[in-house]
Image (cartoon, rainbow, N blue to C red):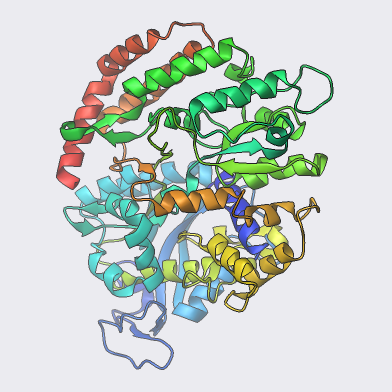
Length: 565
């Protein structure tokens, strides 16, 4: 499941948009009788159930599962991981599912514990596994084919999102055309794309245009360094802020994308199948330009050792006015500057391109694990129903967020308590909150919003951005400056985002070699940028990458690609 950092990044987005807006083979004591499914005014339809995504089992169904606990999570008095907490009560009362724990361990021990369970053949009815563990279970014929029950029981909104944005995650769980697990959907991959964050007030002070090309970006970086945009009379401002990481908020990935280079993912290469994006000629060109920018003082001299927190310090202290960020950086970085300097103003821009072709951000496929059902389990649809209920309570049952109960079942008491982690089955679907609030603000009509989004509407419509405490909610709903709006525009373009074409899990050689290859890649890129190695060192890196396992990995990836395209 998501770690604390992943969930906190997700929370940053949720806060911005909603204002915190069964048993083993003997049927676990059900004496061989398969429960009948009922729901609302529906009448029982026999052993096959009625296909109701939220139908209740009658008699109740006992489900054995396991839980990955998080040491950082705390709960309101009276609720714990293993007692009758709000999630176990919800599943019992809404679905007729009685959860029983085979075991629970800290998240750091979960994968190893699951390996032991799989090796012993003693697995629970429903559990979360890794891609590698899923493959082992499928090959050993230990888990159920869920193709039919997903088609019959998945809530309509989940199916809609799979078709629109989550198909790659679904394919990761598919073997020989059969859906062997329900992915723990990490959300629309496109939600993690980066845009260029820039100090609009600095642009105005220096009479600069918004950069749309790499050359213009370099001109802005030079002006930010040399023309004293903070007007303190000191030579202490920075040009472009980037980290040595190749993907994510603050990283260099957005710049590389401007050269049509796509680090750390597999991309199509004409008729040759898939190639690794970090090894292309476009990557060499981008690194060469970064090397020149570093030499010219447009990139911080401490680039090679700077981490995310230090980049944030540069922004919050008013020394840095340009960096690449995901939508989460609006809450995690940009908002803190406004608290220090209310006169500062930010704007998100599309990625500047090196030529006339639009730059496309690249993203990976995000899956937090796979939920499987033990072979022979009487009611495999229970796993799908539990995911439906999780999605409904945390995100809503449709794009309007209808019937969500975020502040009870996800982050209780104004995010003081993380309640979502108590559920053994979790999920995440596409976030429509920005679009809904944006459109309501434009129309001046919040009547179509749910209660949580109406609160956001009230906050945004009731301020002008001058209050630091509400600045972020206000800012992200201003289409002319919002990173959310840039994300929407990328998503609306056919092939506007480059998504990793490989999602088959770690191949044999990846498991053995990829860590070493990534270390070599990162070290080489940093040396080149900082001038410790010539740009032609990139060619040596590519040659060594191929010799040390890259060629074999490429072959394995393309064998998968040919079989799954």
